[in-house]
Amino acid sequence: MNRQKLYDVSVSIRPKMPTWPGDPGFERSIVHAIAEGASSDVSTLRMGSHTGTHVDAPAHFLPGGATVDQLALDVLVGPTTVFELSVENEITGADLEPLNLEECERALFKTRNSRLWERDEFTTDFVYFTSEAARLLVEKGVRLVGIDYLSVAEYKHGTDVHRIFLQHGVVIVEGLDLSKIEAGAYQVMCLPLKVLGAEGAPARVLLAKS
Ligand SMILES: [Zn+2]
Image (cartoon, rainbow, N blue to C red; front, side, top):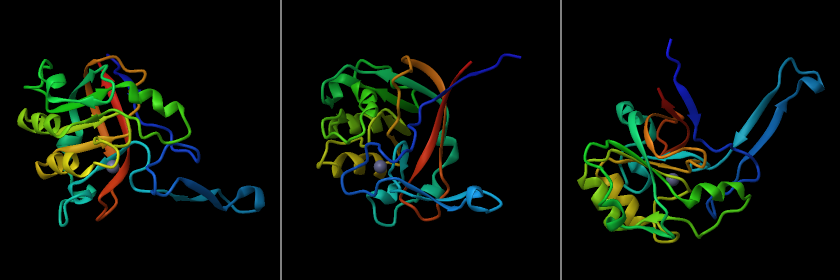
């Protein structure tokens, strides 16, 4: 049997990790402990819905928009291309034009951001899409777009780029760790937690290469 090689491109959720300023950090506390006589270990998890690798649903920026449990599953799973861009800060339309995006339903972007996951602290200095780049991805028919840090948009100027994607039904995956991934064709499996009514949720994201 031809086994697929699987790559986990999700970041590990941990107490010290970069999280968006103002969002809750991650906490795990033990509520039942075998060490204290309970029959099993059980813990409480507490975190923001946009912690680590996660999906943004339309409701994140659009009142009344679809929530994460309503996303089309056939967008979240299927063929994808990982593009590597060596831009300093912005991904512009001109950066995307040379890429073969026509037949690309799902596009994941590896940038220098992937190295930022080695830090414990959030940094505002990350690579993001300009509005023009977001519009171009929509025009090309991309239905899922992924980036390797906590926002598709510039720090403190997030609204336009998120809205361009979300208004056109593009699923946004943020917080990927693509540091060990080579550019190329893969299958992606992006599985956000099925939280009813949530505007986003942490996701386990795998890439497969046959
Ligand atoms: Zn988000």
